[in-house]
Length: 120
Image 1 (tube, one colour):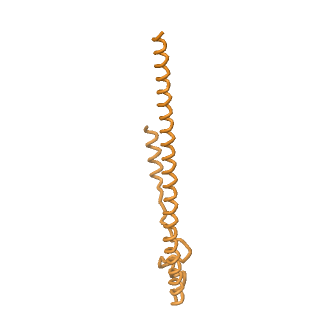
Image 2 (image 1 turned 30 degrees about the vertical axis):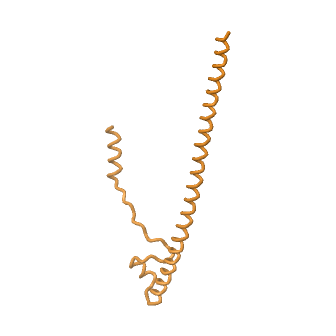
């Protein structure tokens, strides 16, 4: 009977070790996810602060530059330049974006793509 008792005690000891190991793994998993969540929240807050700082700094610079552009435009008009002449000199009017270069597409590109597709 001692063998059975020893086997029973050993089985209980092994079961407890397995449960303890399983519990330790589960706690470690929670620790990992909690640390990752904490890091994500901290980085998100840092990002938001950096973005707010950037917007404050560059927003101020942009407003100053736009105001100077408007003053210079009005000074040019007061000096006798017309808006049309300033535009001809490729000076953008305040509040309007500069003209953009247009992309050229050629028929050759389109036919090359079709030829490549048919050859495959």
